[in-house]
Length: 546
Image 1 (tube, helix red, strand yellow):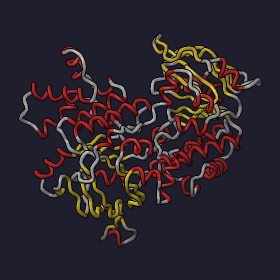
Image 2: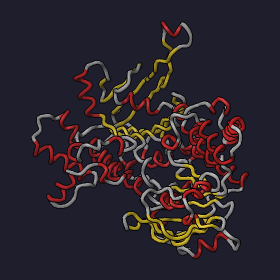
Image 3: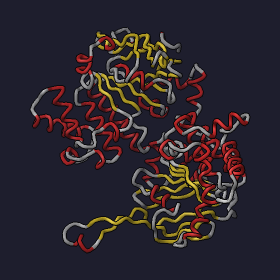
Image 4: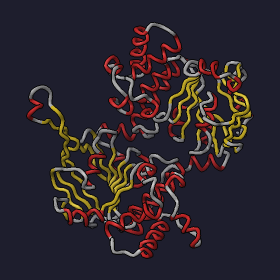
């Protein structure tokens, strides 16, 4: 499986739908993609994989010249015509009609001021010039084809009124509006729950077969690649390092980078189970935990009374010291609401205790408890202030909980926290530069380490981990999970892990709680719940992760 010849040969003897040769992409004379070559046959499902920064997305975007200020050279022959030589007007006719694209995040790709139906109908009218009434009906038919329930009603819905899965289906419907021959799917399932990922993948597979279109899927999710694609291209640092048929490449990867990607599945640390004891005291206990939100009632009754939406209904759990309790469930299951209650940020009823003390109305006591419970959020880029330096971000908690610390002592505590998470190393000059840097100057994995350091600096007993690795590449994900396992051993930390990733639960958790529509449907040890699930919903979650 060499870099180019094997991939070209794999397409077959017929003329390919798309032939990319010597594609080079540069910014200000600095190449970021280095002369790559690949083919896509009509009706083929090809996956392009690699970590963030490998060049996979920018390579796909450059085919339609959607990259601002990029210098693009080489050839991209589509149906016998070189896309890279097209004038802008001719290229506009190709975009959305011959080649369409599904973007990674539908909330940023969809217009928030237009209904999803209007946006789909707009594409149909631009590409086919049919009457508006017919465009609207075709848009409704496309929504129905992608499996959206009540398509006529959803036609008038705005993006924020749809769930994540519905928004992604609407994006697919829009991409199909021009009846493309080639569909570029950029991380189409990354932001979705595990069962929704399977549904979207099955939908793309069915539509691809029905319409006979080719699909180029850009992703770092190897489970998705194994399930969907017939052929794989692996990119590293702007170069294709390996390509071949999916079963052969996964069975015998040749390049070290490919081997590293395939081996990056989260792994359980055997030592994390060796010291477990049923006699460990509980770090956090909930009994009959109930969280509700007020809702408006229709009609005149709504003037005098508010309704109630129950987000968490009667949840019971116990988190022992030094262990991890994983909370699984899809979006809307109530797991994030439970997490906010655990942080003391939402009103609740029932008994909720941290270190055998109840969250209450006493602000001074709550402040002491908050020191014991810290949080690491899903997206480190949005949870770290862009206007604060590393020293200010990591040391912020000390200003609240240890305000008497001097500047020198506070800086030393920050450096120690950075060393604990593997960021601080080197002489005093290097450390000084590190402390003065801002979040945007770090990679995703480094930013997540900063978030962990910020949480650890005040020596908490419990860390709430809210999807701590879902925004990271597979290799970086494995590094962050290994870091969290090491810190748990060294500090006897308790983790409340919120995630929909079954592999992360399997690697990290000792006990598991499965939630659906605000109710705990199953709980128990990680082995019992994942290997012998009793509830049908749990079985769906576990099987979808395979």
